[in-house]
Image (cartoon, rainbow, N blue to C red; front, side, top):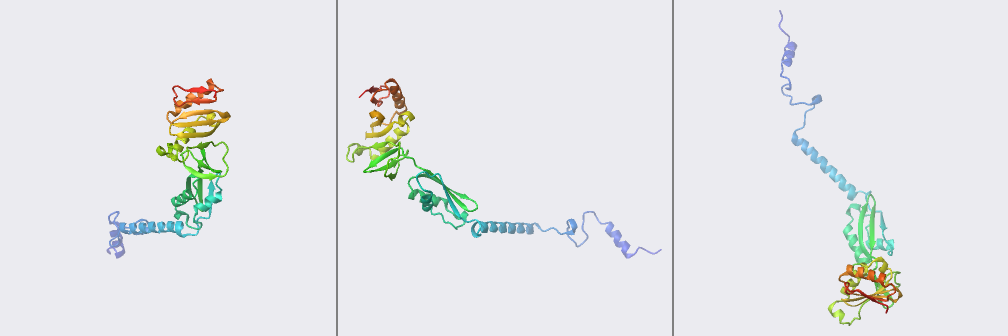
Length: 270
């Protein structure tokens, strides 16, 4: 009987091979016979892909013609004109939006426009810069010649105007050579007056026409109808407010009130 042929012997050897092992000389295979990449090669490919992606993002943000500043919007202004704000901000139109220095823009606005109390510079993708402004509001007016300097709730003198804004009381400080100014300068006395005015109840504040400051402990509120309130110093503000409201209810026709000592307030008709 003839022995097995060469083809049959090869088939038997293949059938007897251990499961999971590749034929001799071929290395490990994965689905479809594709050889897996070594770990080092895979890591290199991933790194190259990440670098390519990062480079694409950087080009999109800084080198492409798409994400660039085309317009500047202004919001929150009351007295200032939006054009004034845009001009002072000097936003670099045409520059990549990502490269705009928002802190520098804020600094330029604060220096050029003292009326601005705060400003937020925001990127409005894909082409805009937004300037969100909050203006200072006058609490008192310091008269200088025929003009008025506006003073805000922080005691900051920030703008000079030709006409007094309606409803804002005048600040009357001692003369330049007054002994009061040797101990407390005008800025300190202004802050004291501002603190008193800012804390007044609405029913008193709406009738306030001026604040006369003779010294640190001598503030007088001048109200409509020729009425006056001797406030004294800026201390014990809450107690003085309660005492004044009580006096005004008890003696509604009084012309002069004294709450400098809130535990012993007084009122008189003159």
